[in-house]
Image 1: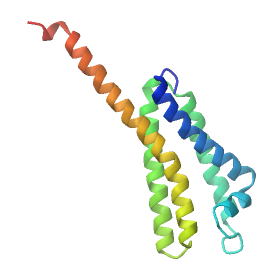
Image 2 (image 1 turned 90 degrees about the vertical axis):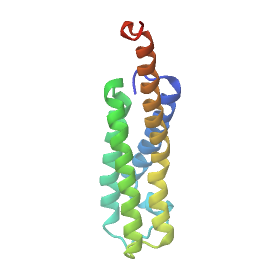
Image 3 (image 1 turned 90 degrees about the horizontal axis):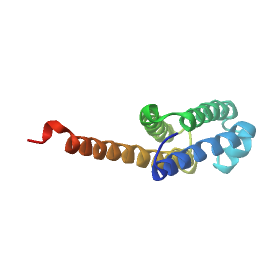
Image 4 (image 1 turned 120 degrees about the horizontal axis):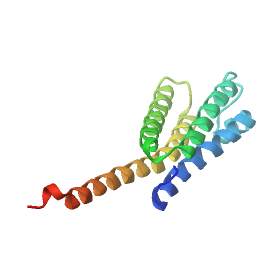
Length: 146
C-alpha cells in the first residue's frame, strides 16, 4: 500500500480495515461473531475453529497488503479478489447444499462482499493509473516524435 495515490490507498485501507476488523473479532470471540452472523453454534460445533482459521488468513492478508510496496500491491489485490470471489461461491454452494440457512448464507456472502468491493475498486484504479502512465510515457518518448 506504500507509495499509492490517496484515493487508491483509501480503498486499500478500507479493504484492510474490513478484513482485519472482522477477523480480529472472529479470532478473539468466534462464537460472538457467529451469533452476529445468525449462525447457530449448536448446529455447527466445528465452526468456531473454522472462523479462527478464516480470521488468521484475513489478518495475515491485511497486514501483508498494508506493508506491500507499489510493485506487489496489484498482485496482492488480485489475489484478494480471487479469495473473496471463492468465499462468496463457497458460501453460495454451502447454502444450496443445505449446510446453512438463507440468512447464514447471506451473512457469509456479505462479509466477503464487504472486502471485495473496495479491493476491486482499488485494483481497477491501479489498472487505470498504469494505463494513463503508459500513455503519458508514449507521448513523451522521443521515438514517437518525427
